[in-house]
Length: 445
Image (tube, rainbow, N blue to C red; front, side, top):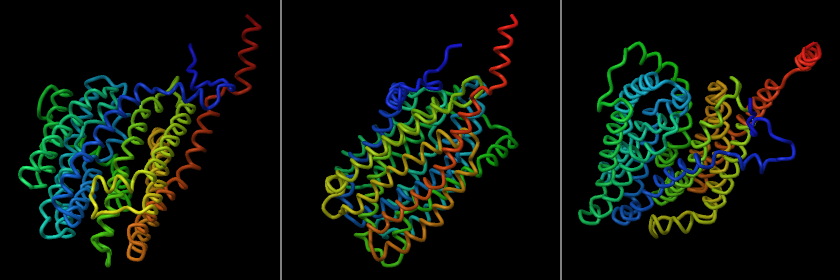
């Protein structure tokens, strides 16, 4: 049997030679799609924010924030567990898994969107309440995307057709329509339509029908119970991540300018992290692939190193460009200081480490409870810090709180990740007894 050069590296190859053997073509395919998806808001937000001003941007940002919480609930853990469930499965079994996911996610999205919409309306300026609610629904429906399925089946082209393509078209059409009508709600409405079209197109491509067959209630309930801890972990992350803008808006004394600046840094961070997410997603299937029934410890290690390097580069670029990009995208009424850019850039780097530990090491080896525990610890630290630092330090304090929370995740996951990698490495080595027995067998023959 031919040995995988990543799994059995020569000592002289070093880290650079190992990284060179990463599946960069696969990563590039996913990266291009993620970057395209991240660029779309950059084209639309300058048009919207110059019409609605800082108060309207805060309402829009609250919609992004609450929509992120809805998306986590709607996704219901399928991004983390789904690719492994459908990778390598026969088509019929993969289709059945997808059908189950659609029903679970539609139910979760509907309930979450209604609840989050009420919260977004309460936190927003009355003039822009509808905009906040529509943006909540539009962002939340990202959780209905079938990208996780196409990721597991190594079909990035279908992600372009069912997810990135429709949303890119919606963003492109919204620019002239907003300029003509001066109605910023055009953007979320078109995004909602794009998500519906994408879901129907995914159903057609995977199931050969627009609507999913109704699975048994027992299978749906079983899958929901299995993913419950993953969803809980995602919601904890939302406490200091996707929910952070809403928290900063809720905290007493947080002025519009403070929330607007912090929201701008969060939105720019989401765009920058698209590159990190792309690399993590592109390496996920490759990193978790087994060799002779065993996990490839060296593939996992190489993925962790690659993701960390990409995160360091992304964070550095963010620190340098974020203040300038803020003025370009959000206009002169919204400013991001160097301190906010610095804390957010460090958070990007820390996120790249935790993302790789989660998707490439801990989740594939069944350590979901450890992931949940690490994010819970981060929320216990991050949420109070967000509420304490924002009134006194403004956007700088809010960004520092998020960065510290990300550091807690890494501090909790990294030792466990290293232990898991070492255990897999040593488990893959033959012991001395086996080697002697093989030698005796060859000598006797």
